[in-house]
Amino acid sequence: MSDGKPQLGASAWIGQVLLYALFALLIGVFSNWPTYRHLAEGQSLIKLSFSHTGKPVSECHAQSPEQLAKLPPNMRAPVRCPRERSPIVVELDIDGAAVFRHTALPSGLAKDGAASVYHRFPIVSGPHRLAVRMNDDLRRAGFTHVREDSVTLKPAQTLVIVFDPAPQTITLQ
Image (cartoon, rainbow, N blue to C red; front, side, top):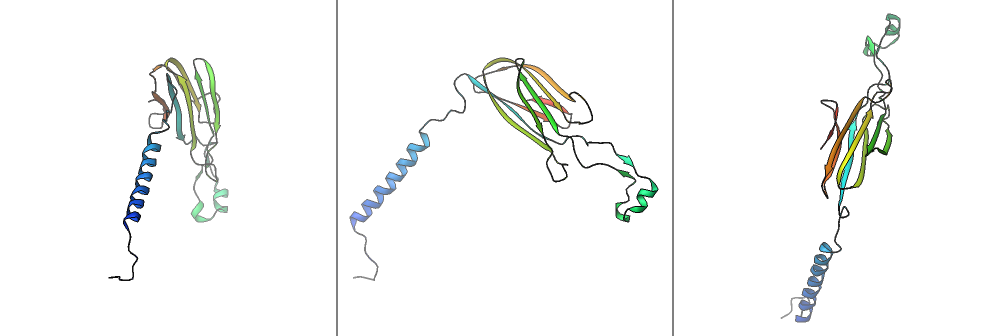
């Protein structure tokens, strides 16, 4: 008795099962092949990664009574501070060789946001001497934060260099 729906024969069911099996086999093969190695044999990885807000580009200054009188009442702050922040200058030396020099500009339309840095350095495993320098204050010459350290990296180890804002130090994790 027919209810208007086409009836599936045994060959249709077998074909559907075979197609699903082929699809599952392809997923299984490509989930394990080709093998992926994020680092070559005997290599480690150093990541320099942080987001930091630099110091203001200039000092705050007091406004005179004449300047305050010219402003609308809601903008009459006795001290005026700039919104713009200093760019972040970062340098990284590995074993005495300069490997990274970068100036990260502050984000935002008023250049008042954080500056971000992210870079990866594959390196041969073993002992290394690191020197990380950062300047977050345009008004000061030289570097405001410096970290020099010796590290021994194991194969496939990842060392992350970050700036910790609470103690204002460069840390190696």
